[in-house]
Each structure stands twice: as structure tokens, then as C-alpha cells.
Length: 339
Ligand code: RIB
Ligand code: CA
View 1 (tube, rainbow, N blue to C red):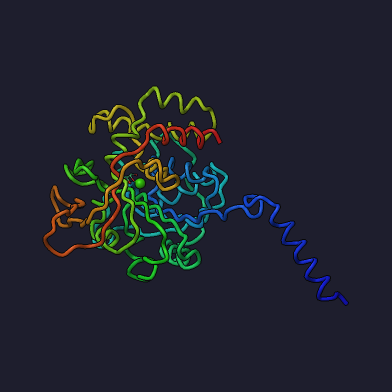
View 2: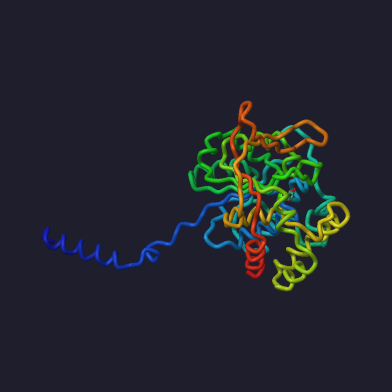
């Protein structure tokens, strides 16, 4: 029978032993849980490669949504990239069209298959479920207060999840949205960006929901994430399979930019938004703003209107990234493509 005195002595000895172990050796930090929603085409694919390569995160789910390409194509491309990166992240199928509108894709920008029409072996893989919305709600519940959400496509799945389970606003720690433009220079109309334009109603529900939103607009891609032919060649020369795919699948986007948007090379809106979600310091300047989304048709469809006036009712405030570190982004790209 151990005496009280002997027990006390043992406990003190144990405590002293533990105290001598450096804090970092006691327990590695728990990985950050991420959920990614994507209309997977050529730039989304590179964003997924960045996420799959990032240490210290746990991708608890990927939801697919129609946008750049029809839903099945987005799903099959996400499954292909997951296999390319030897990830086991679960992939769930989401909405095949916007909340109230017909689907309008961007296959003229990314290619019919969304991946540059260069003949990548995409197709024939099986998703983990047909319920991206349910998977997001479950992930928010299971990782309440910790889940980091990143959206790379139209916000249809997010809006449906918010309607079905409004409590996720409090459970989701942060929501990085690739969408809109902080300087009103659009890529689908003079003032609108594609992801918001495809489903403005879903975007309005999402931006005004109270989610802790960090908006990374297409302006950030235009200013800090254009990959010219020299950069593309040096990324591809990394020589891994994923480096070759990441560059080759941008073929149609590069031609579109040369013909239409005037950017010198292909630009990577989703990857730089993903980089900022994974390493927030890559977003070097932000503002807080009230935002609302215009619906209807015509040049202002999908415009994210910022409201700094003291007049009138205000929706939720969101964070808007205004500047980013190209060096930080490109370093992350090289690291991930070399994996
Ligand atoms: O406007 C750019 C966005 O639209 C990117 O997410 C691209 O993949 C497309 O979805
Ligand atoms: Ca996208």
C-alpha cells in the first residue's frame, strides 16, 4: 500500500520531470481543419496543390460546385488532382447550378475540360459523397470554432448550407472568399468578377451572413499572381508531375488572357487566395468594409458594392484584401510544386 507521503513525493517528481521537457516537445500543435469549396478548373487545381502540400493543415473536406465547368467536370478534376497529390481528403459533390439562375460556365477561359484541353487523364473516379452541403455543415459542427473555409467558386453551396444550418456562422472560424474585385475592375463585366457573377444571390447571402470573411478579389490575381512565360518555364522546370500539370493546364487561360484580358501570361486567382488563407501574412494590406452584391442583369450583375457611407442600413462587415506579397506567394508555389 503506497503511503500518502510516498504518493506526494512521486507526484512532485513527475511534475518536475514534465517541467523539464520543452513546451514544443510536449504536444505538436493540432493541425488546422480546412474545408475547400471549388468549381475545379485550371487555377483551382493549383490552389488544391498548394493546400495538399501545406504542412500543419487537415483538409477535412472538399466540396465541388458548378461554375468554371459543369459540376461533373469540376468533381472529376478535383478527384484527379487529389490522386496526383496522393491526398486522401474526402471530396463531396455539391450544386450543379446557381440558386435561381441557369449555369453559365467559363470554358472559353479554361478550356472545355477546364484544364487547358491538353488531354490530362481526368474522369472515371468516384467522389466520397453527393452531399457537399451536408459535409460542410458536419465539418463546421465537428470542428466548431476552428474550421477554416476557403471558397474558390460560386457561393451556391455556402448559401444553401447557411440556409439549412445558420449556426455554422458561429462555428466557422474564417472564410476566405476568392471573389469580387476591391477596385471595381471586373473580369466578366466591367465591375464584376466571375464567381460572384455566376450566382449573385448566393454571394449576397454569404457576404451578409456574418461569416468572418476575408475577400480576395480578382484584383489581387491581376496585380500579384500573373505568371509570364519565363516564370511558367521556371515553375515547370521544377520537373515534378504536379509542376508540369500546374503549368500545362493553363494553356487556354494564357491564350484567353493574351486575346482578351491583356495580362501577360496566365493568372492564378484561386492559388493566391488559397495562399492567403493558408498563410494570412501573404495578404499584406486589408480594409474592413460593408459589402452588398447587386443582382439583376447587365453590367452591374454580380458587382460587390462597398459601402463606406454613414447613411442607411448596413449589412455585415467583411475583410477585403488590398495588397499581397508576390514573393511570398511565388515561394509557396515553388515549395508546393516541388513536393
Ligand atoms: O474570377 C476568377 C474566379 O473564377 C476563379 O475562381 C476561377 O477559377 C473562376 O472560378
Ligand atoms: Ca475557381
